[in-house]
Image (cartoon, rainbow, N blue to C red; front, side, top):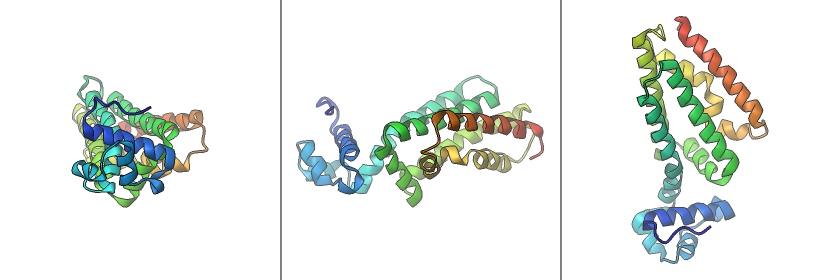
Length: 201
């Protein structure tokens, strides 16, 4: 489906670029081809995105932003600390896996950005980590997580959940069924709850 002509120009360009990648893959995607499909000059595309890399990263940022907004809503809710932590982790796990299954070529952009340490992946990871850190600090303040070492608590969370949030690991689990991966995630979350509540960090 073609992007709506009523959208802002930069959004239209992103929509055309994402659709081009879905059909042809990143290697066969050029700014000239995207501009042609959007019925504009490639110079006009460069007015909004200074390089192909900037355009590709903007596509990734476009689908990550709603995830980040959703995490903020979870953190602002008046729920117990571990309930919020579980909801945050579940939301990101579902969003990543859904994107990987439904839109694999666009998800590949996220994998590449993460592997190369590009800004769009770093910023997203830092936002995700900041939300988790905030919930852990709330849990520590309330006594739900009886530890005073936030760094060890953060390490526990992300060491235990690495396979569900590292984009390359998600691709490596492509042959694992959704039921299996969700079951593994649930078991990890239960173990994480016990670890945080144990006070043994």
